Image (cartoon, rainbow, N blue to C red; front, top):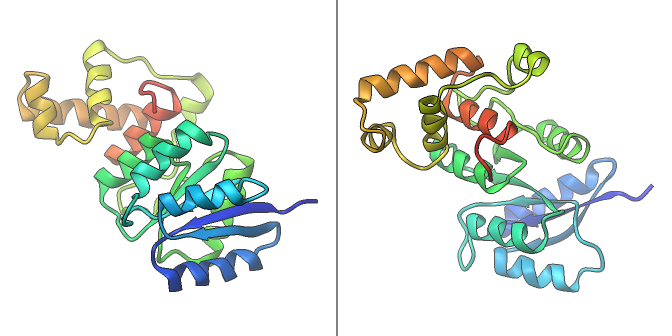
Length: 215
């Protein structure tokens, strides 16, 4: 059986080399190439005989960063799944990468077993979300949601969810919806309770899963 190929796109050479050795030690996986940024990745893809199944993508890189790179992949190589791998656990960054189509978001200090699990789950399930990206991230959705399907929402709740999936702050969302910050807090808390999530990221994952907001 052919091993799954992984591309590593990271401008920190020593880290990338260590990652290459680790991935090559995982059963069923081989590193196809290493690239220092998105532009370098494009060149590597053009000369590689076979596209990788997964690309581990750093976010803060020179020349062509992670956001620009995932957008290029969406337009030119949509069959390649992307996992963000970063030191940045900022909620806004995580939301932006998930909205852009990243199938997972991992911090660089994760245990090797978690990386192996992430690669395997992205191959099998198409995504891997862990509650370790931030202390508030919920790793799954409620059982009721899985059993009964999508919950029902008012038009204002749907509007709030769409804005919550943007890079706007809650204060900016309140201004755009012409509501007070306290009312926005009530919308947020009500939706958290209804969906059984603990964070804005959990809300975004729900919205993306049910295509309430398109990537």
